[in-house]
Amino acid sequence: MMNISGAPSINAAGGISVPGALAMGDRQPKVTQYIFIQNDTYTDPSSIWSVQKLSNTQYAMPNATAPRGSIYIGVFLRDIDGDTSHGRLDSTVEWTVSDPSIATYKTPSASGQTIFGLLRAGKVLITCRWNGLVSVLTITAT
Image (cartoon, rainbow, N blue to C red; front, side):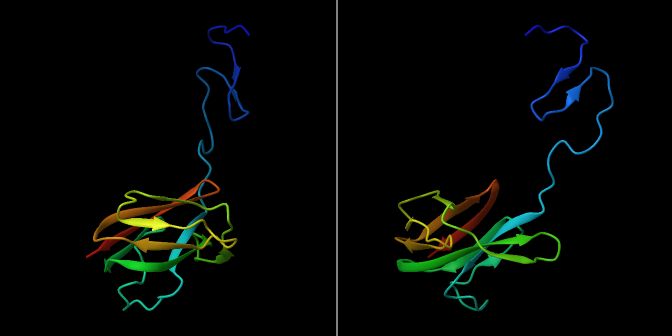
């Protein structure tokens, strides 16, 4: 393939780019959905084990106590506009833990739910990835 200065080229997104031309439209697709995270066992906001939604991608469990054996965390697909739920995610959910010395987890179930264990006090970030979407749960345990 030969590159000629000033000649049109085909870009990775499938469009044609002409030097000096006006670009119209979004370059990045608009995100219209997000991963909602909740504690499936303790949904009462007054519980120290409930998950607080800080934003569409940031969640917190600020008052947990350690050690704790089983925390059932569920994930759901929701629309940004109106919070319409599309149900639970599936077993292709990817979970990661920032500090395995504080928290561990088991392989996700068919519904994306996983079981976390808190081993000791500290702050740990639990990241959930699914289909290009990412949400983070920050657990602070004493």
